Image (cartoon, rainbow, N blue to C red; front, side):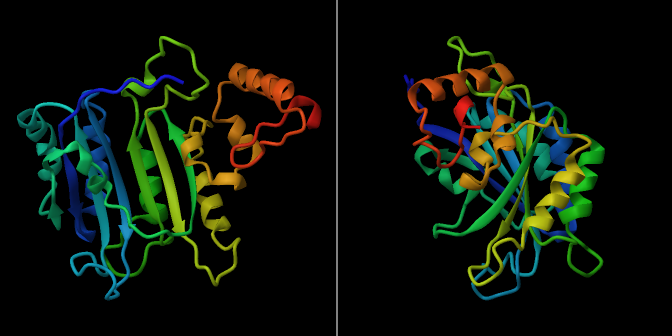
Length: 269
């Protein structure tokens, strides 16, 4: 494997956080906005229900927050212009989008810095349609008139495309390059709870997204060694999967390396 490094000192990036009353509008706006941005713009949006507990920052407590994440590898002034339609959604709880050192890019998603057990599922889409967005909101969107959403889970939409979609100069086994969006569902696991408790939620999510899903998967978002053989297969193009199975049979016929994303050698099926 050869990895080329590029000099990147700063990027224009950060997060735009919208409260419960603007969360649905933020997702709808993101759908329209992301379809027209240049390749230098990487973005995603997450809808996150926060409990009203002291451990949560006060600005988020009891809110269903929309967090739009921005990373623009270009001129800051152009980045400002590109982000303007997102800021026009309305008042932000937090707006941290600005020029930053590339070394601080982890602050864009602002993930917890402590280990956390979770269950995740995802689908890939060629297009993020109005109907797909509404299905997401019906399943796990905010409720502005009282009551919880049907599913208390984090929903994330990642805009793909760009260099990922380009045919590489040297062929690789990376599949589903043509997908333009990844839509994922994440539920926190309770260490004292039933291990299979989240499964109905994730099954309902996959069923709800089926009308717009490509059927493909990305390995980086499969749930470790619990990923099914069909899910792993769906992460590759058919001819690449066959080739990998042949290599497995030649170099690991006893299936020693079988953890995480397993490809079985043909004769061990």
